[in-house]
Length: 106
Image (cartoon, rainbow, N blue to C red; front, top):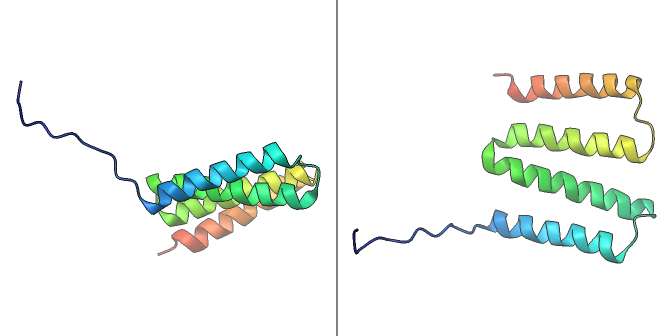
């Protein structure tokens, strides 16, 4: 066994701290304020979309993480407004296809 082994510590960046703060903010919003007001629900949807964007930004590029977080936020918003039906899903799919063509076209 070697004597001079170095311990590897994970690097903590600003994005990690931002992610932890966003998760704590979301938990505190749901704990202290019941989600009956539409403003609280919309702020929670925006926070969830931001958390999804931050997590996916660690693993993928910014374009793909934006597309997935936009999808997640739009589906949650449609579900909150109770208008998530097959027609709106088809319209959302075509919107996402056009955004992905614009983002990934070279």
